[in-house]
Length: 320
Image 1 (cartoon, one colour):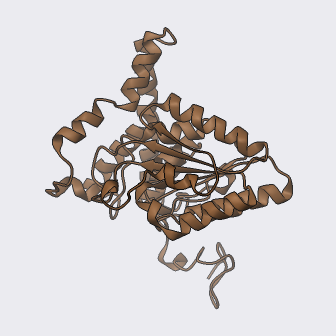
Image 2 (cartoon, rainbow, N blue to C red):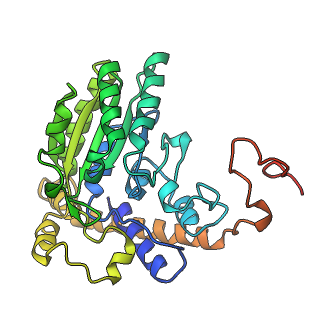
Image 3 (cartoon, rainbow, N blue to C red):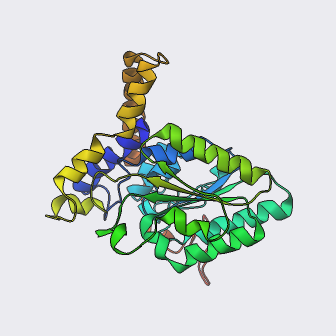
């Protein structure tokens, strides 16, 4: 959770300094969801992510340097500097991609889960999506398909209360987990600010999926501390009150878990401070790696567009 928090903080600085082109969608405040879920997964399990996907990638083992390189549009990035924030993927780590299309990761996760089932593999697929995706038809199609075929997939709804600036309560009558129950799968709601609660729910869902009992829906009640995207920091938006934001920040997932670890005698405050220092070093090294990396050459602009090279152009890596 420290790593995700510090990564996002540095990303905003780089965006503001115009080192990262465009904007990014911050995961700050939601760290407990990504860490809680991914801690219950094995290396062979896969996930699909969202436009707000940095936390998911890092929690599944994503490399900080490669992520910064991708955001800074460098050739050493996960997508060779061509995809940016919303398309980071690492198939080797089971990260089947962030996705700029709301809810589009759900059917991809079902496809992976179907492969696992047909091949007799005890792997699990996880689909992360936000509350804004709960009204997307493709999400409901995916849930219905997963239930009918009893696929080893877990649907994780990160309910951060707003789809851009639209409160969920204004566009949906029932809670997301209640709607998911209609598809005949176990559906639970958990405190998304408590990494332990998320982990326990995810572990139960993973065990169920591995044993062939089918999908589970987990709604994590959480909150993004900042706007829908980085540019909103410089806009005078008023769809959230200062009181509401402060109330959620009082339940900060990192502070909550750190205080619990110390009070339970699991670690000392100095241990946590040392962890923060190590994370700071990782972040600094990742930024340095990205800055030292080369930008893609104009002559390679058409490379990686397709599984095979673009017609009448050299294959990737070939000389002109």
